[in-house]
Amino acid sequence: MAAGDDTPRLISLFYSYSHKDERYREKLETQLKILQRQGVINGWHDRKIGAGKDWASDIDDHLEFAGIILLLVSDNFLASDYCYGKEMTRALERHENGSARVIPIILSHCLWEEAPFARLQALPRDAKPITRWNDRTEAYKSVAVGIRDAARELRAVAHPHPTPLPEGEGA
Image (cartoon, rainbow, N blue to C red):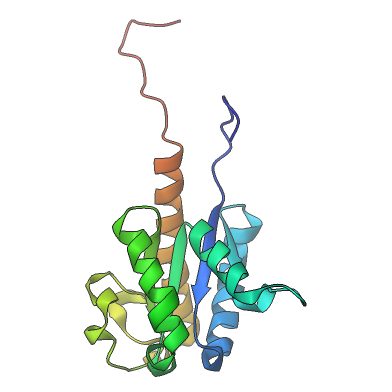
């Protein structure tokens, strides 16, 4: 951002998920599209890697750049050596050092409470798995609202409003 630029920073999202859960990622992307159109977020996942590119390097680069890292949690995610061992581990390191916000999104019943991210506030509301909601659209909206609020908070921290002058000072 250039000096004097009041444009809020776009928050980059990184989707960490098992390819077996791709339909959930796609539905979440659809729900978040309005925030992308508003210039609040920009999502990235490994299906955006172009032909001939070094996929591991591309994933690492986007994982390092993301302001919000979404863990799409299911038994498939927990069983994936790459998601659990590589992406989640680095995501939590970045969360701990304050350079990213990690948000677990519970897709289905699994032993996620045993995972290192269990201490983090999960979505949807009450960490009720998306697959257990009678109205899944409501579940995805709950997730989208949580992500929207996190992105707005990160944008406010990155670009705080100036402190107003005390009464009687200034113009």
